[in-house]
Image (tube, rainbow, N blue to C red; front, side, top):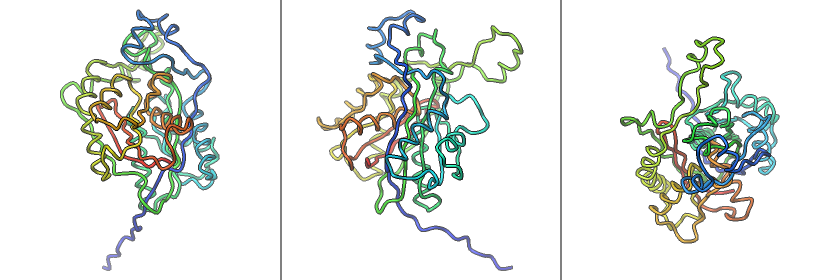
Length: 338
C-alpha cells in the first residue's frame, strides 16, 4: 500500500499589527469599594496601588471583546471578512456555549473565522498570543484577532476583603498578521503546581454544587478566592526568572528593552519585578493597574493600547510582555510594537 506524505506549510513569521481596547464607562473609586469591606483608600493604595477601576454595567464579555477587537481591526486596516481566527481569553465568561469568541466574531463581522476560547486566567492573553503567532507562522491563518476580555464583577464577591478592591472589567485586543521577520519572540510558559499552588487562586466551589443546592437562594455563588500573600511571594520569587528566559529565547538583553508590560496584577508586584530586572532608567513600565484595576486576561492588551495611545511607546518598540495567575501559570514573550 502506498503511503502518502502529509504536506506541511513553510514556516513564516508574524507580528502585532495593532491594539484596541474597550473600557466600561463606570469608574469606581476606592471609597465605593470600602462601603462593602472593612478597608480604606489608604490601605488599598498601599497594598495594590489601585485608585480606581471600571465596572461593566449592562455589558458582557463577548460584547466588550467585540468592541475592543473592532477598534484593533480598524487600526490595522484589516476587514472583518479577512480574519482567519478569533481567540478569546477569559476567566469570567459564565456561558460554555456558544463560545465567547464565536459571539465576538459574529459581532465584529468576522462571520467565517474560526473562533475558540482559552482559559489560563490572567496568563490567558499571553497564551493566546503564542497560539496566534504559531497559526500565522505555519500558514494556518493570515490575520488573527487575539482578545482578552473580563467581567470580573461577575465572579468576585464585593464583600470579600481579599479580592473586592483588586479587580475591574474591560477588554483588550491585538490583530496579528504575517511579517517578513519575527515580530513575536518564542513563548516561555509553564505552571508551578507545587504544594498549595493550585489553591492560591481558585473558584470557591463548582457550579455543580450550586446546581445541587436547587432553589436554595442562600446558596453561595462560586466566587473567586485568592491567597494574596502567597501569590505575592510566588510572583516576586519567580517572575524575574521567567522574564530573563523569555529575553534569552528572543535573543535580546535588558538593555534592548523599550518597555515592560506585565500583567497588571498589583503595583507592588510590578515594581518588585522591574527592580529585580534592573531595567534601563528610560524603559517604560506599564502601571495601568492603578487606574483600571486588575482586569485579568485583558490587562496586557489594555496596557499596551494605553501606552501606544498616550505616546509613551513608539512604533517598533521592543517590549517584554508577561502574564501570570491562577494555576500558578505564566507566559512571557518579547514583542515588537506596531
